[in-house]
Length: 338
Image 1 (cartoon, one colour):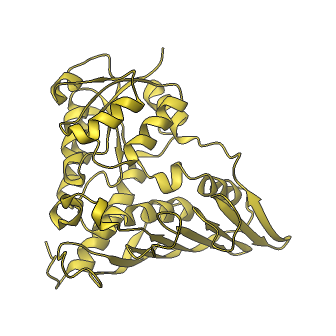
Image 2 (cartoon, rainbow, N blue to C red):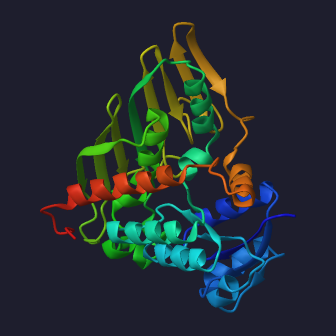
């Protein structure tokens, strides 16, 4: 029997990727709820087999639905997840799943109380073939022990296409909480431990004074007992770049390194997911186009079997904890201080 899922909240376009990965894995899309017609109409056109529910309650109270998926406005995701878990449903949220340490504590408590799965779809890992391939190479010992990562997450701001909540600090949680959470998850993954901490962090609004709630730049330093990491995220992708951001990740090991150009190779190679491996055997450019994306099938298996193969529950929470701690450190003494 297939896993039946429904959606509550369409406010970020990541919802299309979340739904598609579940459909590819064989799940059944039942219904969705969104009050905004402008978002619901194109969504319904793409996924004609799913009905538009008149209320979120209609979805929460449907006992045939096993999984609720959300890409609601960022400050609403935790509440949706808690309500879903208390209705006996597992959850897959777009990142960030929470925007404050208080929300994180509340989601943790609900997850412990209910025993449900709370998963965050960190798409820059789980839906990015080059990142998945890098994980396979690291696990196989291709670069020895990982000792450092550098994650860069530039994004295109496209002001005229962004809703007002995007510029409100209380709604999106800050730049390190939001897009920085991707990088925190990857740092944990490649470090191979959850015993990690934030060393330093900063945020700024460098070029958008008319939007005082916006943070257009952020960075942080992370460490474990044997690994360090640097993260930079920003909204400064030039208009001439033909994609939304030049996402990059470098993984340094004791016997080599891997560099990912995830969405574009500005040197001219076509396509996405460019992976370069340098070690004692030489230099390789590896084609990742055929790499399988395991997150969707693994998540459905976890729902059936009550396992944690897609992502450990504590790993999921720790990535957000690091991002939120970095956000708090960065905002101390600023106008954004909470």
